[in-house]
Length: 443
Image (cartoon, rainbow, N blue to C red):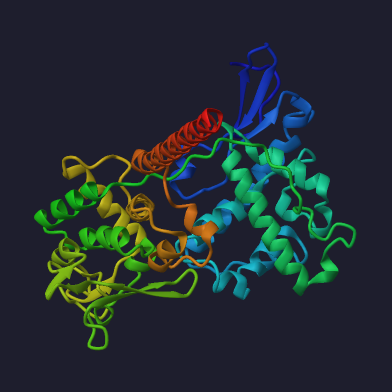
């Protein structure tokens, strides 16, 4: 579509449903491939607000200046040149707040390496959001974010260029609430005294939440033996460990499960599982003696582990095949392991597209519920400290519904039998009373 008035760089114009023109800021794919993560933005239907009076102002000018700044920083990093921190974040701004938060123990010790890329992405999304005035949120002072301003930031983020982003909005509110609470204790003078945390008591738009997929035992072992057949025992072992012993995938891949944890001298009949998230240790018995015979609880899982090579202390390791460190053994990265899992999933028949390491752990948690364990018994195996955290993993499967229906039906039968017995007893009592009265009349 053409427009007689000039358009700034990267601004597109489209005809909307009810005939007004809509202006959009879109970064070309070429710059995306160079590493530009700046989000696309709708600029509204007003030419003056979007482009200024002469096509050289408005929100587009702010976004183009931000784009140039980011590309310059990217070029400096690529060339190995130092970046002036003062250019990135001024003291007391939202940019500075997030940068400072990432140096605190609340981030360095509490946020796992697996979650940090998502934290970084959300923080960058918040800072790069441009308000109606044309200013970046990251350039604003902390005290400028009032409860009303927080509402506007949330609304601007969830109304993304490709539709509603309610889940992203939830992440933004949750992260900001946490960062404001943590950093206010350390820098109280930078926060508004009337509204110290504008993200508290926040009203989120409701959405239908989908539960993560859970795979079955058959699918886990179909995947595991398929991997072993293709000479890849590491993803096979990780999938089985996540399903059987419920260790978080990132912990398994990071080397938290070691060979000394498995049938050690001190515990020759158990495996020790460490849950790094809540610092919990769980011992899973591997066998028991029943009527003089050894009963192995995880025979097939141990068969899978038997195909692993012992390359070091961690159980899951790989050998480097190229470069100057060729032949050395090292721990896997989580993205690297997930990539291999998806490659193997496509090669193995009968494995669904939703198969992931997370789905393996969720499948194991669901099996605990299908076995009708109590919350206490399930948590003894999963390592969860609260019943609420434990229950969140179990999926509402047909097997669980069937077990509940059987119990309900058994209760109904028992109730009917009890009522029949009461009725029979009442009839006998009435008959006995009637016979007694007849005898008295005859006498």
